[in-house]
Length: 195
Image (cartoon, one colour):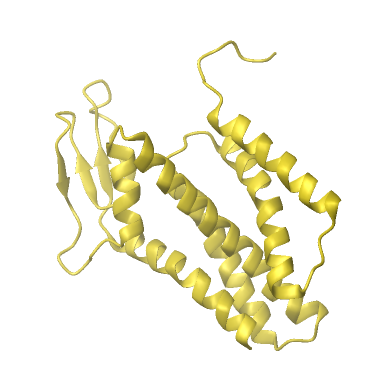
């Protein structure tokens, strides 16, 4: 029961952030070149082609800290802010995916109550939405980088919740995956694409 509670508590900020983001009115972002086709979003701000950002959230809707950080990262040129938002979202994504999968595993394979599987399934649905909040523009690169982080986070989860005893291969494999993540995420873009 304690493990399930820890999973729920670790994922609840994610649910709160998604709920807050979904309660805000859509973001209308138009540029001078694309004024006829505004882009809709859910962060509760309107950015006009003048570059001015104005709040468009309902009076009863208060954006969460995560929603504010995401909006700041998208509207700010600060690399540190953007990096912090990316890191927090990757962490929340990993917790939601691993935690949701673990709850389903526990219900199906370890005989835990049925509601663990239900809670795990709902957490996995939430997991599917978290990457859409990322300021990174490329789906494929985003998931490739997340995959490397997922490897390391899975080992940490296994040690913490299942008593997994890691060996040298686990540690070296995680390090190699994280080095790969660093290369893929931080590689300077703009060079020639690989054919």
